[in-house]
Length: 488
Ligand code: NAD
Image (cartoon, rainbow, N blue to C red; front, top):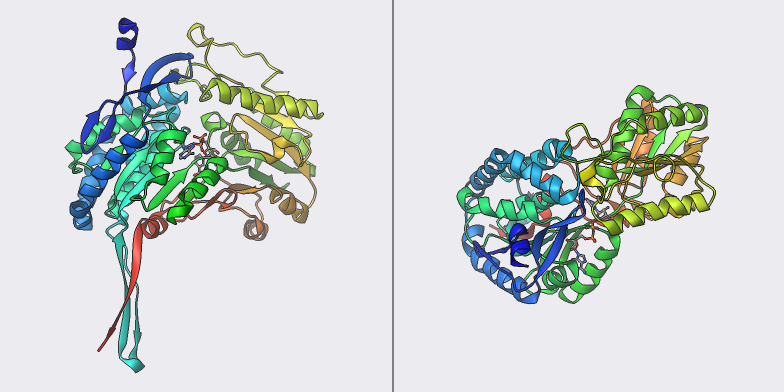
């Protein structure tokens, strides 16, 4: 009914500096209540075409601005988002199901920082120069923006991951067409409202909302979009690679993980246990960098397990807007069912579920009975070949197993198709270096987790991705390099 639809938040595409309605819409759910609360444009070829056209038209002016001019605009945009931090955090929490605390302290501050970081780093890149004195030549490289960048992001860290792409793309002088996840589009739409005030010229940032199959694929297949930066699942990346192949597009693919934590018997458990709880369950376990296989050296295995499970049971699940809550809702009903099914499969294979799903009862506040909640779940005695130890679960589920030797644990940690992130816990510096070098993983955190210097490369090996992003890596990805030789 009209009255019903009026109550819903209705998003519009942002093309050439204007909000434009779409001919059809998708329902978007509030994961903590199960209610439809928002309608997202169901864009397709036509909308993508208009957005690419706008981005192409804006490219000559934007790409000819100096890095300093672009930097000032990015900084202004960072200030504007920061000014509205609370509204953005509330929106992200409602749209995604994550706790308000996580949105306030991680998602939105990082989105702000992404713009500030690239506003700064774009001012400090240097190009290369070599001399061939004997033949009277100097060679140097020059870098230029590529054109229209297609940016596709997932639902787990919505504004955080989208701005991690938009900021370097536009800092380098490209114009963009971005497509956030259809399940979490609200904060991208809110950001569009700030672009004009920040001084971003019309057409530099265009946002097209919709599904992967329709809007995403139209962007990937568009001949005038020479590069695609994608963060999401490995399966989707395979499809994007296939679809973009006829155009030989430049791809950056940040994909899934099955991240190990390796805990040696000389680890400082007072640091290791709380950090490994966070690395397993933060953001409902919906972070590509979350730990989901915990290898504990035999001598401390029982002690670790007992303390870890006792602490996991203290994590409070409930209304994400309650600041005392640690675990919010999972993204969707389908995803919750999928995560639960892994726990059932583990049980069927003879593993032991020590806490959480199917073992403890979950009491939810009245308004959240239909939300997609799940308790932090710890599984032990799982075989390495089990799907719970091989596939990305992407929920609050972690497996704990014992190991004996360094050699053995390296091999077991590497025996999955993924290679995104690992943590190593030991007070032996030599061991930490040895193990870190041999892990097939784009990131290795020792005695910590999730501490990032955005200057350094981020990305995965094997099925976890192709390419890296970071100050220098993003600069290289979002620019085309040319080698020029001058003979005198
Ligand atoms: P997904 O692959 O289903 O979707 C990601 C995005 O791609 C969405 O915007 C979606 O609409 C779009 N998409 C889907 N099909 C498409 C197609 N055929 N063509 C073009 N676009 C398409 O992933 P998700 O479920 O949204 O996110 C979870 C996944 O993302 C997990 O695997 C997680 O590990 C991964 N992830 C990786 C990183 C990283 O940096 N490596 C970070 C966060 C999440």
